[in-house]
Length: 391
Image (cartoon, rainbow, N blue to C red; front, side, top):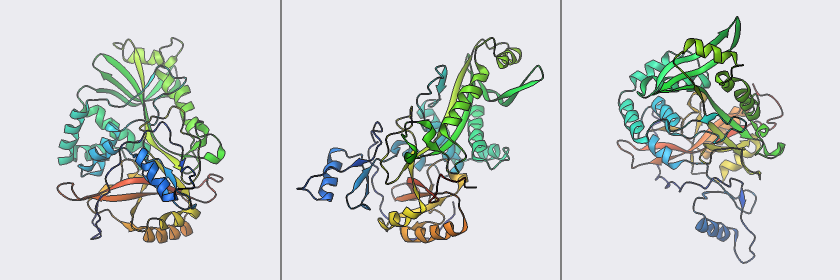
């Protein structure tokens, strides 16, 4: 990343212990006539130290759960190249879901290799990222989903215990196009059909219970979790179903005669964004307890939100950098809360698109240079979201 020339470095705040994500609903401070709101807040923090966000905009503070993965961010902090960090995020991060109802034979994949081996591999790659960068350049697309596939394509071609047999392999059987396999792989003596997707969903609590998949919507209101999962379960993952009535199964038998059985796997990663300042009823059914997450808010709430923490530093995250947490020696376009409020005001005058922002902190102990790293990310959406399709 480029250099901003800023000298306003601040001491980093220590990372909080990992949250117990079993309960991600906003926790309201209990009423106690003998204690001030701040005393109540400090008492809760003493009992539950993972709680680290507080909102004072309504007079009485609300403690918000931290959607943070300190261990993963610590792994990323030593990596200097964006593409290598994105690859590390894929390899070391957890999936959005830990269970996929109605797909008992599909494994939600993570931890495909021992962490120690991945760490060594990533450090070597970070010292010379040329092989990864050259590989990514072969995928001539600006779509984030294609970039995500390209990262995993590199992984499957470089990790010795995996052999890539096919990528984006179209299935034509008896003159009919049945679909396409994202990845066909062999790992030792097992054969895998793996589908992949990276998704960013905002929980619309005004629509109902957030445990229901239909209330998780893409930022542009053009995608929904329930629709995506239904397509995965009913079409994409069924392509390799071990069913004699499945024509795609016959195609696999013809082209891979040595494979007696195909395992079905899903690489589904991304972020769930929870509504800021709104009481919500939970998380998406089957969500992984350590999924990546953040918050979303409407434009009309953003100025008040930023005014609560004038000393914080922020960056706007371009779509091509949505994968791993924002990071850099001196991040481009580093802004104070006041500067970001002005920037967002100008943005809303010129565009109706959602925008992603991130709070960053400086880690001065990181060798060889101090590192700014994202601590929380937010989507800022139009005031009428999700009523209209924002293009």
